[in-house]
Image 1 (cartoon, rainbow, N blue to C red):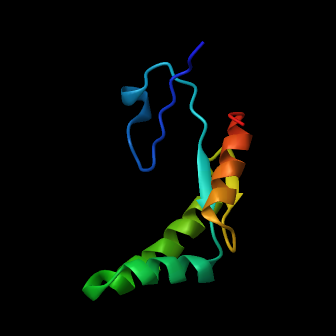
Image 2: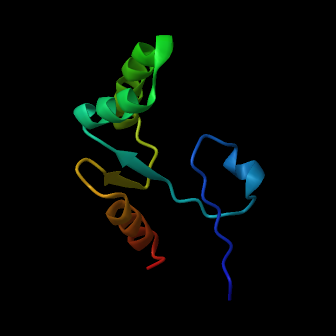
Length: 93
């Protein structure tokens, strides 16, 4: 039996895109220093400071108001290792 999989990487009305689906939410987390280094490395121009501030603000909000089923720490980890952990926790590996 083939099970359809939908990977959603941003905010979306999940119920509208996948009616009746069992949804598992994974949140990727990083230390504030790592987060600001990542955001600072990709944002440029006049909105850079706002993005840096907002990334920390949102991380703190998500720490308070948890909605995830699984929290995956990413600080100091390679992308492949993070992906493997997500797949294992989802039961796909």
